[in-house]
Image (tube, rainbow, N blue to C red):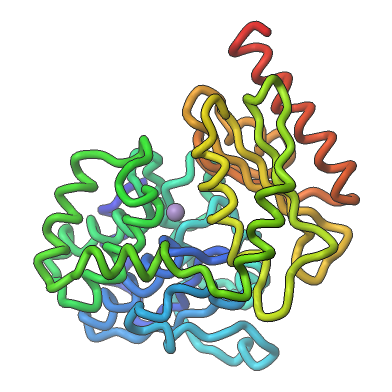
Length: 327
Ligand SMILES: [Mn+2]
C-alpha cells in the first residue's frame, strides 16, 4: 500500500490518536507533531500520546505540550483512527496500542524491519525519516507549511540523518529541508538545541560511560555499557544514548558501535542500540534478537543480566564481521 491509501484514510477519519515509539527522539517527536498539525489544518481532531517521558533538548519544538503521557485515564480517549509513526512493530508504542478497540491502524514508517501491522501501511525504507514521509503527505494533500510544522519536520529529518550526513540522506531530503527552511528556521539554532545541549549533571556520567569503552574484533566493534552507576541524579539513560553512540562513530576503524543499558524500571531487561558505518547490516543482527531498525541503526531488547546479554550480542556481531571481512 502507499501514500495514496494513507491520503484516502486521512480524508475518511475525523479523530486521530497519534503515537510514535517509546524512547522518543527527534524523528518520533517531529513526525507526531507534524502529523498533528496536518490533521488540524484539515479541521479534524487529534490527540498525541506517549508511553514514555520526553527526552531533554527538544523544548524548542512547538506543540510539545500536546503530547500526553499514557496513564489509567487514557482508556477514555475517544478516537476513530490510530496513527502509528516511526514504529517497526506495534510493541514499540509501549502500551498505547492496547487503547485500541477495533479502530483502524495507519502505519507510517521508514524502518526496513516494519511488520506491516496496520490496516493501511505506508512503509518507505528509502525515506530518511518518518518526518520526511509526513512532509511528503503535506505535499500530496496540497497542504501548506507554517513556522511550526516546518520546524518540527525539519528537526525530525535533521536528527534522523545525523544532521544530513548519514547514508539515508537523499536529494529528496535536501529538497524538503530547503523548502522547510524558508519558513523562518534558524538552522544553527536548531542544531545547537538538538545536539549541543548536554546538561551539566550529565557530563561526568557521560565521560564515565565513554571511558568504559571496550573494543572487540581488533577495534572494529566499540561497546559501551550504562549500568549500576547510572542514571545519575537528574539525568536519564535515554538522554545520553545518542551522545555515546555518536562518540563511538568517531573512532577510526570502528565498524559497529553497540550500547547496552538496563531498561528503565526493568532491571532484568537490557536495551541494545546498534550503529554501523555501512558495511555491517545491524538490522539483521537486531532481527536475530527479535528487534529491528535500519541497516545502519537498529536496536533490540533482551532479557537477562547486562554482562550475559553483552556476551551474546557481541558474539553475534563478531560472526557477522567474520563473514564480511573474512577474518
Ligand atoms: Mn525515524
